[in-house]
Length: 410
Image (cartoon, rainbow, N blue to C red; front, top):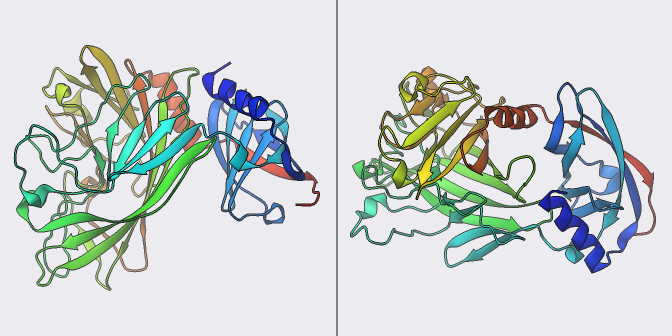
């Protein structure tokens, strides 16, 4: 039995959980046209069953847990063959009495995620933290509000921060490069130019759970060419970090949902350009043509040929202290210009989904720019069949129908 399920069953049995009420629910899960194996399914929770706060439902054997948070439910679908469906019955439990399989801990400017097995898949920086041993770094490059470090299940760090060749690169971050705002040209990517920056504004909330943990945070894009400076965009991030999976491939999975919206009545115009948007900076040991390896969902491994193509996902990886590790970034099909064009650096460990490659566009007042990405972090070399299955699950998750069986006093 995979670790996740061993852990959940152990929690239910060990803690002697009793239902929070007599509320029982039937879930009918339809696999659709593809095999499902540990698929993440999100679905609306009926208002008649209560949609506020955080609720937990579990099957009697503890093999299935459903987390309900603010009207949306999340379930890990264990295994259903293509074209088939299954029905499971779950009962409401008391979330406070179930040990979290993944926890969020905010301390000293870092929001860290910790699994029950002691793994730390990823962290989010809420304050400026400069790397040791780099000497003085120009304050123009200082920033917070990004994900770093990213770690594999065995604990290998695969992201980099403030690399010497590109000091403005920061783990997983999301700035724009070539822009026009109120007839000025702030560059929010190349911070050393002093024309634009992205600031961490606030950590609004974070939470733990037996299915996933997460947080919500805010950033703002500052036009430094104005006098006084002007905020061009506001941005919110909603991040989910799922409890680590062991079967069929040990991996860490987390989701990023970004919403960017105009701070004034002026649009942010984004002319055609080769990079800008969601970026990832890989480990310093991946520097050099021979040390960093790419694989796209199209099967392309040549980084020169892959650059400026479009793909559903891209894996970037290499060796860290002699051990292979890497991460796939999955682009949701609802994203603007999906499958999005990619910036793949010719000799450095850098990747960027760059919709501006496909031509001029703009983020306009009253029309938020919404982006969704899923990250899959593994040890070893990439398995394209596994990654294609995960992208299909992300793009077209199994459908879930909720039926009320009984409702008692609450």
